[in-house]
Length: 457
Image 1 (cartoon, helix red, strand yellow):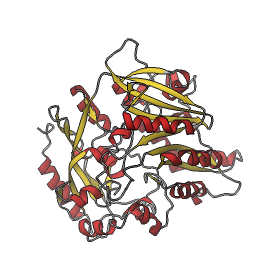
Image 2 (tube, rainbow, N blue to C red):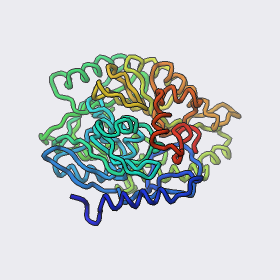
Image 3 (tube, helix red, strand yellow):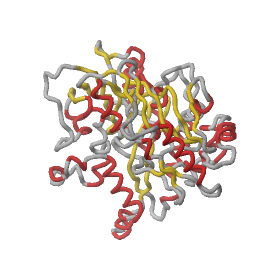
């Protein structure tokens, strides 16, 4: 069954023809109404319109699977699956992240300690490659493309349709916020939860953390429940979710509100826009408390340098944008956070433990040691620089990259990166990217991975 007015084969043929019609010398970029990228890119005229692949083709409750267009946002995907009592195995935290984007560019959330990342629950994909062909990719068909697609960022092609796994949910998620005075105290708790899927005799379905300072950090454990003996909390109005973590040890949210708990205030980033001020919040409409609205404001600021100009007028030092998600082995987390508190100083910081779902699989361009637990550390703000220092030089971001690499980790590529080309492919290419590029983009129609994510082409 397909959505009304949609015919996948017809739309795929049109998309392939559209790609082939773009002149060879023009770089290709996907035309999207929303973006969650935080890195500069060269302007291009050739934009590939794949909006026809925005929609859920079919949800099958019997097999707990869904067939979904690659341009479908998780907001729309969850809206289609939740009435069946199902959700994707990993729902990234921002509503407008698309399924195809989360697979080719990676995504993560609090179910990743047991379900891995979004690409790990994909059964098959229909991929528009640079040659203008639409290929089926799965573990058994074009498997090199299937296992090499994650973290390829559109440099190998675009996912038009994906078949993904779903899992059953209940109407509510009960939360426990555990406070720790030292991040080292969280390590055995994280390891135990990942090993047993429970804590102190209660099942754990979701696990993430928030670091407010070196002396105050929390792990938040979420458990599916149908018991609503308490009225569910609402953090789309006056109250702010991340502040509740410090204020209460337990909580209850509807499953829908839990999935989008971070989107309402873009984690905590809405405070930079004044939305959390008591005299502003009541008058900021609920429908505008969402990450894509904030992103548009930030994009305008980046375009016109409004904050930077204001800082210069006030005589304040320049600020470097430090918007990153990095992943380090669990045992290296205390050392990384010690470096981070000392050298960067952004607060709060998000923690999200993860472990590869299937130890027998190798995801070519983003390889984990399948036996290790990793922790995603997310931080999104600006940092004051020394007088006369150029924020475009990226000193702080470079220091973070070097420390993450030293500790055996790596970082997501949705934001600024400064790796030298050879170093980059040592981390992300693993000796196979060139072969994938030769096979699926022999004429270099699509911008290469380093060129796209580091050089900004």
